[in-house]
Amino acid sequence: MTGPKDLDPASRRVMVGEELRHARERAGLTQQALGELLFVSGSYVGQMEAGTRRILPDMAQRLDEALGTAGFFVRHCVKANESKHPEHFAEAAEAEAIAIEIRQYESLLIPGLLQTPSYARAVFLAYQPTAPEEAIDKLVAARMERTRLLDDPTEPLLWAVLDEAALRREVGGPAVMAEALRHIAALIGRRRVIVQVVPFSAGAHASMTGFLQLLHFADAPPLAFIEAPSTGQLTDDPATVARHQLSYDLLRADALTPKQSLALIAAVAEDYAHEDHAPGA
Image (cartoon, rainbow, N blue to C red; front, side):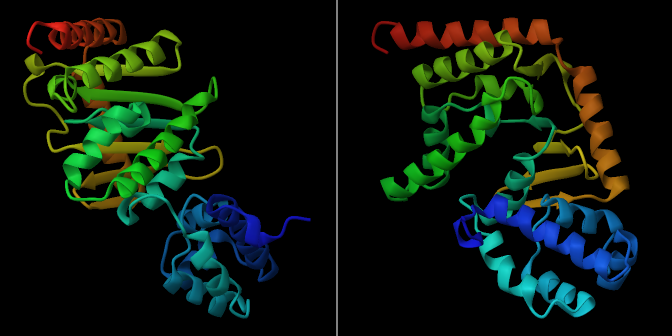
């Protein structure tokens, strides 16, 4: 039988989460009651049990103390927290992998789940211009692994709102941009994703500063993730999630319809294709 050492980190987190639920129930505690002992919300406990939140080392120690589990969570949290993604994004990427709905906004970039390998490579090279090629290869491979979420024909639902700047900013050159935008158009054409574009003509809008992601799950409260260079915050606070949901709804209201957005994406892709084939290009 395959042992725990053979599990990938995501599967290990689910296993550890199940053990947490069993330990809590053996102790006769509700999620809310355990959360009070740990100084977190009951929903946070639920997310650890569901595997949507990491059990960090300090939390693992508190769990062992509160539940009398003789160091079980401390021993298992390190392996469960291994990730191919940057540390500030790792927890969000792992939650993304088990979400049933992902709604997000990007101001300057094509979202990672919609990127092509060539586009992703250009982005990573811009972030890390002196990184060795093998390091860039690993980053691109991890990003492309994320995009395989869309191989499933129905889940998760991905609804992306993009600023027009994400279409117009030439990342990697005209050929890379033409391929990237045609890829998005193809996903839309297969009815696999919903994409809207906030045009420049909309002026000021509800999320001028950048990235926003809302994650919904079958058996855990929703999460919101906001990101800045080399840092990010994942939160389950209901008031904060609700505030970000309002921002997202306002963005959708300012955006072109999905049909109009597809037309714009296709037109910009053609512009890039013609630029790439123009004399002297």
